[in-house]
Image (cartoon, rainbow, N blue to C red):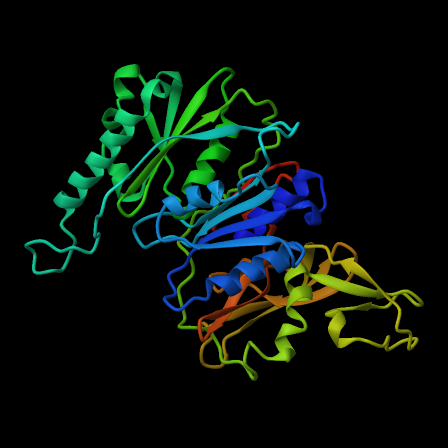
Length: 410
């Protein structure tokens, strides 16, 4: 999701990825031993950003990590991405990306600033009188109320400019946030976005989509004993470059099947590391003598047709149609009970083989159906996630290519 959101933002920006000075990534994943540093480099490599870009990695512990990612941009031209795989019965899985530039830049968009911030020591795993089975909800609600009241008290006259409030506040979002901030008496009603770490950035996307001339929107986010109130100025110019990517089907995520299949070699080995950049970017090589197409390029230093060693880089298209498909129900340990494998003809005529997500059954796909290649995790080993391309139905994500932002549901 982080790669898809970031890719859409960079494409719509109209400049090369090399123009990005900093990449700030806030991620939240349920895997306890996940290597966030490696995952951030996967995002960087998949987006084609230079290896000398300033990289800031935040392991998103709560909603406020998305705000911290935004503020970490500083004076750089930065790509800020926040992604959350969601929680059972809690926040939705989603990702959002923004191109952040200094306020002096002559570009259209939205201007944001921090209005107030408050914090207090709060242990969310502190247990009450129920024998330690659950946190004391009354105590936590009391602390969250205090934080929100302090936000409103220190915001000053900035609150009088607010015409809309968006709450990306996790558990604190169940409280009457507008009233505790002092906005309810001003006639401001709160909306909410439950996308975890991606919530604050998704809220800014929402402001861009639903802008009102000469209006100011407040965004409230809370974390573990922290709370912040931002204001977004909707008078900054162009909004048509904001877009929301959402799946029309909102089914439950696919079931987890352990850590995935075993691999013949460690993920750290040169066998995988020499190809991973090309695989993440879906980047092939074309022979400059005869036009033969090789993928991945690292495995073809010599053209098998004309023996030339001269190659040019060629990005493969993501869109295609099913040429052949089969459902395999006899898979090794670590795989789901069944997987649909697709051989698709891409829009340039090249045929590409890849599996589909495990929730897709064989009777749901037909020859000729439109499909799209998307980056998906297929196994986790020693805290390192391995990513590769999978085919998804083209109707699952409808992307507008002329956007500065992207929010993705899965």
